[in-house]
Length: 273
Image 1: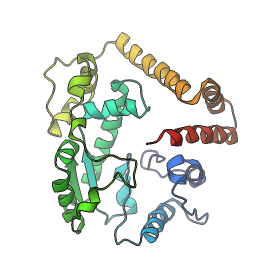
Image 2: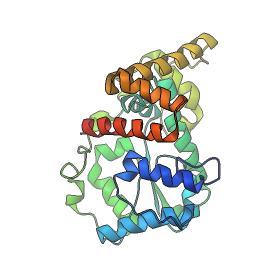
Image 3: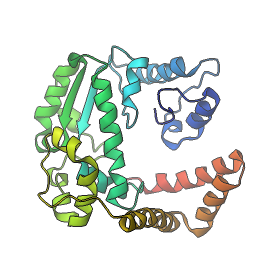
């Protein structure tokens, strides 16, 4: 979905190339039928995954443009995991996507707005919202609710995720970390951008005064994010590989970009839990 532009599917040639070389999608070893256009091709991917698992239901995690999913699967059921935006913004830093919570807030606002749009397209019986903070506090109860929503029976073994995934068992200590780990200025950066949506989702404001960042502060935020990402990537990849990445994206042919990205992906995979 991240390849979509507005309400338009991506160019099919560009998308096939993306699937072949993207670290996460290529790891699934999907067969890419060159005769298919975008919609049937994406539908075939989920069908392949279902055939491999031999299970009655199949699903996928979608982090962006979930509002376009009904075009592909109009009868699907949708599970939305909602989390406090101040913690999401912090998490985006940990993922390496941004270097400050001001920029990290975009990773909450975009998906939440797309979720609202999806809700206007599918009936209530096809969607369920699960609050992250409640899920990690009582995973068994909320997983039972999700199973009921999907027409399944809950089994305790469903929570044994540490054996065959990179995820840990749900930990309540990850809830509301922003209260201890964000400064008042950082909290303001998040709340200024999403105050109304945050409140409509049932979260409470910090109580601090909310103000628009000054022009100087905005310049600092942008510079800090760009410089911080560059420095962090130099540390992760090494200066030479970082320079190759910068030059290949700026000047190089697509083949050079893909070759450099492949080297970066190897480093990312090595550092996965």
